[in-house]
Length: 146
Image (cartoon, rainbow, N blue to C red; front, side, top):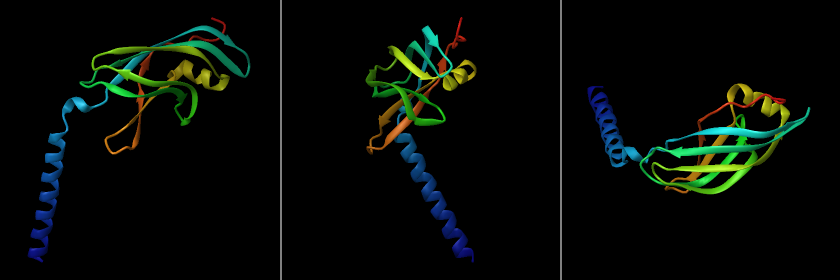
């Protein structure tokens, strides 16, 4: 019994040591840190849809340049894309401006008034897997008619 417990402790310790050494080889500045602001202009709403000029300034506060796609989408179902901004490159410490006319369902826009829009960054990791990152945005969605 003592041999089994000791062996288990050695296995756990080896796994922990391996994890720590892998974590140390990943530079801290590899973390994706995006944030942004948004504005909405030329708002035109009816009972079923809202069209607008959506503008976002996206900042990369991380230590490396990022290249990937950015999309305006539904946060509950990120596959539902309202606007694809295509391939974007954001330098480390840099900012990009995205702007276009967008039409979304009125129901979705009504939710923006309390939680804001959802902007998502899509990138491939070093293993070729697609990863998604929600970009936190600050701003205020005006009420239709304002």
